[in-house]
Image 1 (cartoon, helix red, strand yellow):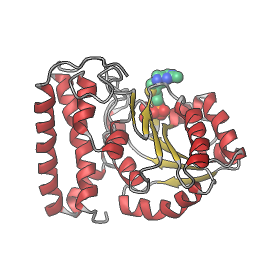
Image 2 (cartoon, protein in one colour):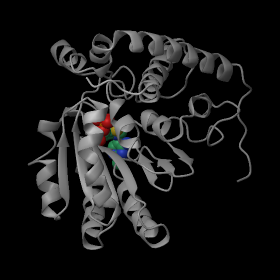
Image 3 (cartoon, helix red, strand yellow):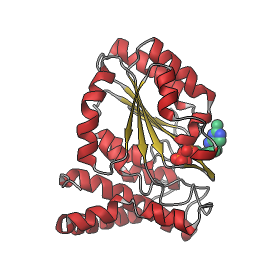
Length: 296
Ligand SMILES: Cc1ncc(C[n+]2csc(CCOP(=O)(O)OP(=O)(O)O)c2C)c(N)n1
């Protein structure tokens, strides 16, 4: 894999250790509800966020800790939100999935983001030419009708809309082959929308391939970028229906082990520092008082 800047590798490792610490907190009974980790998929928001600008708007989904951290690099606020502690991004009301902050919105309702992203793209075209709306969705979310209403208007109105598809081959417990007829590329083509497939794990390589395409989005040519990726963990908590072989296959695509092998010195140092940093975040946030709903 290409050698990354320390800043990019730190972000990758921040997301990885944040997710691992969340699972640890769950196993100690310190978190309520559920959570969807992006273990294995961290390189996607890291690669994409390097091509985004301050004035762009990012839409996340139910599996968005990495999307948020790549956008705002704020593990304290996110963990406080998830734990319902002081300093939470949305006063602890949104939790893991429902987060709003400048230039960023996530909701756990599949497909909900795309019509809103299309509307935001229209708004940005009028008020901030050159800015785009970027929405992350999974393969399973192509089963939602709202996706197609949004794609229709994005194509018709030439909206600066970037749809990032994290195709991890499964939606909760249903393999993509059992829920999706045809292809995502074919569905984008039906609207005359450009589609690019990415199967690389290499952040630099991905950015080189996407940079000129994302420039075109900014001038009104919507784009679907489909990442062939692998989910290392269960869908949320304790609901992994995959066979041991399927899980092993996902692990064999993990960027973490590959990068560690290719750049051991840089990796070991930054892996340690990010693990310790996230442990400090956990200690700090866990010790805070409960968050209170403020007037907004
Ligand atoms: C409208 C709606 N229906 C069902 C759900 C329950 N649900 C949450 S995530 C999920 C599967 C999502 O699969 P995919 O879009 O492939 O994303 P992934 O979880 O693989 O990242 C389902 C069915 C939901 N959140 N929203």
